Image 1 (cartoon, rainbow, N blue to C red):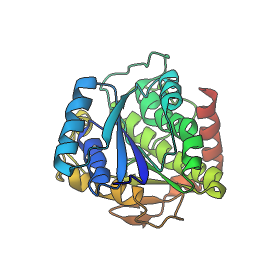
Image 2 (cartoon, helix red, strand yellow):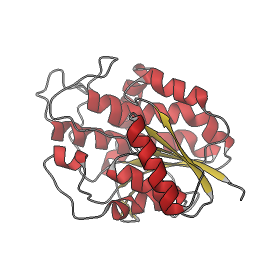
Image 3 (cartoon, rainbow, N blue to C red):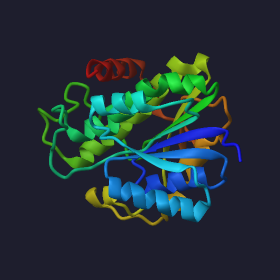
Amino acid sequence: MSYRTCALVTGATGAIGEAIAKGLAADGEREVVLITRNQDKAERAVQRIRRETGNAHVRFELADLSRGDAIRDLAARWNGPLHILVNNAAITPRRREESPEGVELQFATNVLGYFRMIRAFTPYLLAADGAQVVNVASYWAGGLDLDDLEFRQRHYNNDTAYRQSKQADRILSAAFAERLADQRVCVNACHPGDVNSTLSNNLGFGGHQSPEEGADTPVWLAIGGAGIETTGRYFENRRKVSCGFSKDRNTMERLFEACEAYG
């Protein structure tokens, strides 16, 4: 069989991330690469997906996406075009922590991780001549403070930090969509389903949907379900939803510049 496309999924050993990877592997038409920090979890996830889909073209790469150098190294190891990038990796530590670079960990992973992945993989997305970027965000979003992105002045609360990070992801999706629109790269954001996961439990929530239900909208977007020209939009349950965050151009440009400054 000729594998026509390649997909990359971050946070691919979590409940929703693995389900996204499995959904993308299911039709046997693409290579799927799982990005994760833990080799044991990655090996088990790859084995499960291969077994359940029959797609032998599933593999993993290790990277700590809270670190800029790790993302740059990951991109340097990449070969060939990238047709689908799903930014899904997110964490919700209950106490304020910092990345090895000294950046508050939710912002480093949930926001800078998405930003840096798109930046680092843009050459490979362009080589695909028509690519989809899906940023897994949330309807649970808001409270962005551009003057205190890392909770150095505010009291850290993991729910507040998570909502800020998901607002930022929605805004950055629109910002990248504008910048890449003329280069046949579509960038959209979405809310996944409400799944009982480590992330949701850390926030004090459960979840009433299966991982597969949670992965439905991200997978649908990734394979072009909204149309190959749809970009800069936010989706819930496969439907476009107006995103007021993305209409504030001043905030969009300030956030983009702030992320650029981290390198």
